[in-house]
Image 1 (tube, rainbow, N blue to C red):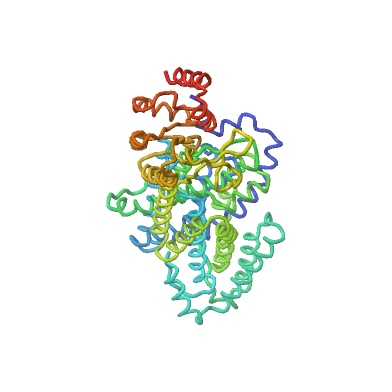
Image 2: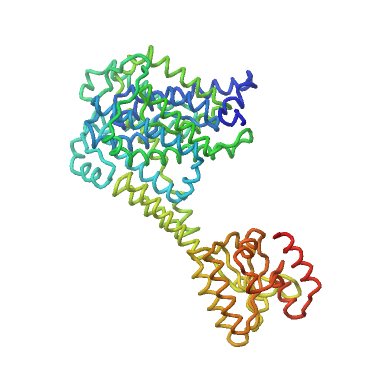
Length: 575
């Protein structure tokens, strides 16, 4: 057993040096500066007291630095997961209450346990059922929902909070005239400042700049802005160890939202991890190890008052751009949060909530992917409609139903595409031994008595009928002149029992019509399945050829010497 694969920190820590530390130090300080105001802001999204956002930035980061396979992914509180927490927990308790806090922490333990179990049993492949269009549609919709939910703090109006955008927009329309002038001015100026500095250089800690400006304005000019809501007191000190309260009824009610957080958190982490992996050649992301690392981050984090956490797109990108090379950058960020919790929380007393709203709105609206939507519209209409359906379902039905619709539609599209793959007839390229698609190469020679049939997928229970119908249709078009069918099987990588039985039945059917059936380019494992299923009881081994051209040549000239040599080879390979 390779201990370094189980504990990835051992891959880089023994060889750690000063040159690595320089980049990690700058990155850790930069991310820590951004993380502190973001943590406070995201806790408010989750309906929790601000300090719980900072708790989320402690133990989860440490656990990921030890067990995560990526060295640059930044773990902690994120906007999307925070909103999902608020959506699920608000139905069970009043936001901000002790019961609400307890349930949110229990949710962290549940999410971590599920992620850890999935990682142990190598279930990371499940994420493959969420295609990129679904992820794009889901994240874009959630970004809009998070952004519009923050208008209550940005404009100082008590708008309704919901994960269904039609209710938010309706309430904004009815109450927009009640906006608080001072709150709106501070919030909108903060938005402009953040965007301005982001355009100059993304490494500039724009969030920290507006936080400092907001605190100074409220501290020294607070009497003129007495109607602006501020964070007020944030308690100092580190979280103490404690096991979350268990309630089986609550666990049953939280399970759907926990599963949603499991999928979303894993998707966020694996997406940004893969993106950063492509920019270097020092390490490789291991999906199942990522699940284990996330699981431990959330499980152990919940024992120290953390609600569900995942990777942050923005902080991870800044971590990489600032020169982070290893998980030491995350540990430096943790140290900054510890110092803040112990000594600096009183400084945030005068922080306006509208400034936090501005930070969130700019951050999440950057996740709305217009370029991907435009690309899909041009490249693949089906993927575009899949993305749009997930986007609308998430916006109108809510986050939990949105991810369910996305997964369901992904599976439907997968089944549709595998059950109706591309099929075509091949023709011979003049003066060559190659056969090509007649629909793409007009010059190919099509012979009336020969059908070269290509099927571009595995043959299994869901598409065996489609195979049979297309084969029969092409054979019917040939009419009575047809004497030979060659199945070009180079694209067939698997066949199940239903597929084999269908092939055997079709071979018998065409034998009755005095039409010979040959196979060309059958892969070894597929050929083994054919032989084990008794296909040699219907046709002999001489009906298998390396290429379509060999099959046609054998049919026309009876070149037995070459074919018998090949038949002997594949017979020995099968044994």
